[in-house]
View 1 (cartoon, rainbow, N blue to C red):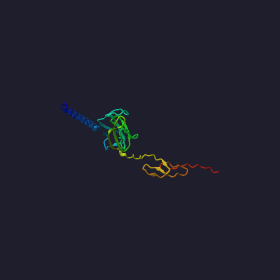
View 2 (tube, rainbow, N blue to C red; view 1 turned 90 degrees about the vertical axis):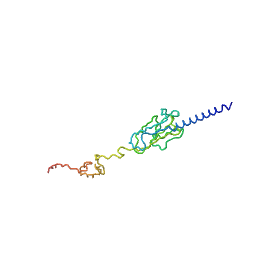
View 3 (cartoon, rainbow, N blue to C red; view 1 turned 135 degrees about the vertical axis):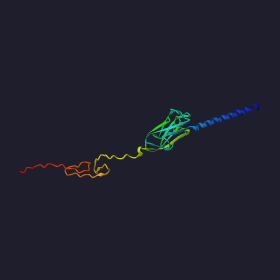
View 4 (cartoon, rainbow, N blue to C red; view 1 turned 90 degrees about the horizontal axis):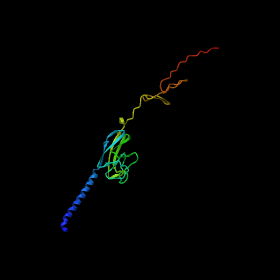
Length: 210
């Protein structure tokens, strides 16, 4: 009797093995497909100073507004980073950096305010509701050049600068220094003009002779 049922048992065992392998394969494929990509700005782009918007594309992961709640597989939010040397990925610890270098957001975009001129690296990481990284971590980053308007050059000085007098001379509109005019005895030269003072003629007063 036992011999009659053995083929059936072998068939059931083989079916269970195939099912287990299929489930493991499906789970592995799901974790490999989970991904985040920065679509804006592009790697190596040159952008102007000011606000910089970072936009990401997320696959196989649900972005939900459950910040600070318990971690649940398959859902969470995005951590946005700026100029962070090493993205924190330690399992079970919040993936946060010092204040001003990261932002937690339950959306696929964030605007960094008032970004200064220079080279900057923007990074993102998918994290759980409790801010801990996924396992394995899912990260993306780009490096861009931020430049001031007009190529970052300082504005030229105005040629109409007020020629106020100074102890060493007056400022000239052409960038030179005018030679101060010495004051006449009993009078004062005009400040900052660089021209000689003109004496005002005085009508002589007659003096009676005794």
